[in-house]
Length: 205
Image 1 (tube, rainbow, N blue to C red):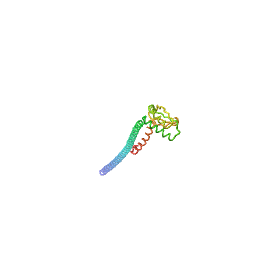
Image 2 (tube, rainbow, N blue to C red):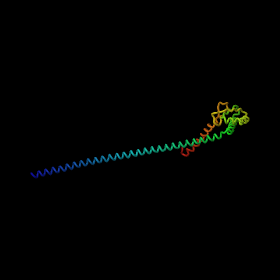
Image 3 (cartoon, rainbow, N blue to C red):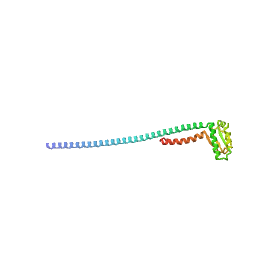
């Protein structure tokens, strides 16, 4: 009887230990799986964060490069504009210097002679000049020119002109513009084309 009780006790102990061991093993396995899940999730989140950071850095680099390129282009355009503005001012000053009364008289004489030589039938020539140049031309150059060409030349006052002249060979129906403004515009366009070519060659266009 005593032996049977002892055997029962031993059996209970054995089964209890086995049950406890099995339970502990299950808990350990569950904990390990949980830990692995946590690590995998953390790794995935870390990879996502790194990927997002790389994408953001790339976007920022692209945006920065675009901003720098635009700033460089704006600077070059501003420089180009300033160069052309200054050149136009130089051209204007040179044209104005070349359109003093004595130069205007000489230029006007050459223009009239050249036109009349190609159109000998011209008889009604009209020239519009600003007041100061009108006076200077009227003092002698007009008579000398009319004597050479044997053509009627009418001088008119042009208050809208600062220097230079307008000349018509058809009685005022049309005219050629040799004013300071027109010559400056014409010469600036030529200079601008040459400067634009140089700037392009220098990589500044």
